[in-house]
Image 1 (tube, rainbow, N blue to C red):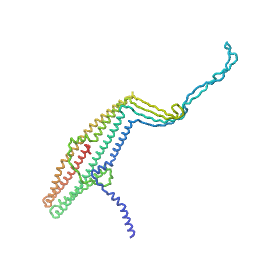
Image 2: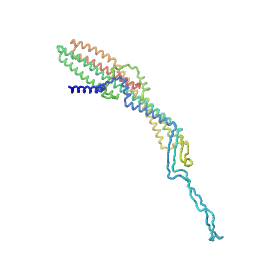
Image 3: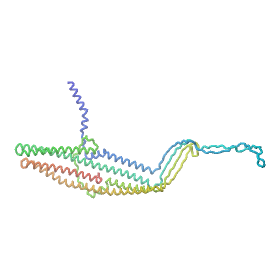
Image 4: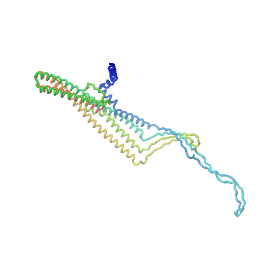
Length: 466
């Protein structure tokens, strides 16, 4: 008895410890479309990388801006010479000389005279420095005039920053569209499953009714079996709808960077509003707001600035530079600390570079033309994209009204079929046809509604309104 009690307490303890994990594992995240878009924008790795591109471009702006200011540097050096520099001087040595005596004919007499004179030379080295040289130098350099190469480079950095921001907007718009389409597909699969379950429940009631009529001898066994076969077919449709919902949810989880094992549910409400935007208005919106067009226009401007820089490559540059030294030995060569300074104004005139600058100019001209052609091609492609989304949206919108009427008529026809079948006035096949017609009408309406909403989302993305 004690063993059973202990085992029971142990099992309760295990259940208590595992209960939070079980509850957490089965927790369902309920999402609206707005929630899904926000989560995707916050978690998507591609968006995060695009944001880092913006930060990189901001740093490039700082680098380009720094070229407007003089560069200042501080350096220190120590030099050990094998021999200190110096100058050698020769000095005469004075003493007494023993000079021979000559007769008037120039013959030596054998006598000698002692006289003062230069007896030789001594060499003396004058040191002009030290074997150890210490230098502390402050240098600056400032480009006075470079034919606007620095200002154009700074403008390119600003344009690169705008380009990165537009690329971020483009990726965000693409992600919003992908999430919207995936979210709507989940809603479509969810509604499709609900319709399949509704049809199965309705057909189950009809099978019970057919069974009662068959037992009463009012319908044939063939009609009764046909009803059961139709119910089995609906069961297959329910399974297919469940699988379609699971697949749609997995695709949405991938976009939201969620674990595939997590449970999510989407809101049942499908928001629908009629679009009043005309085709011309949509195209005008696209030309003004599409980040791709803005990005390509920025690319053209960057190519223009790059061409200006290339053309300035063979122009002279004026640079101001200077040095201030604190060193030992000093400027006079004495072994003591002293200061020295210099100012340099230099002009650099490129005379011959083997045609390199000509090639750079031609290269920049070709890049500018490529950007201009790319902009023209992009505008045509966006106009086509806007037109296709607009026509698809209005085509779906015109179908919705007629399909709503089809549902109302199919529901009325099914009610009539139920009462007439109960009275034995129609066959089972006619009743099943009425039910299938209603189910198809509801599914067609739902698909058209989702297609309309997807086309509307594509039109918003195509016009840059997302």
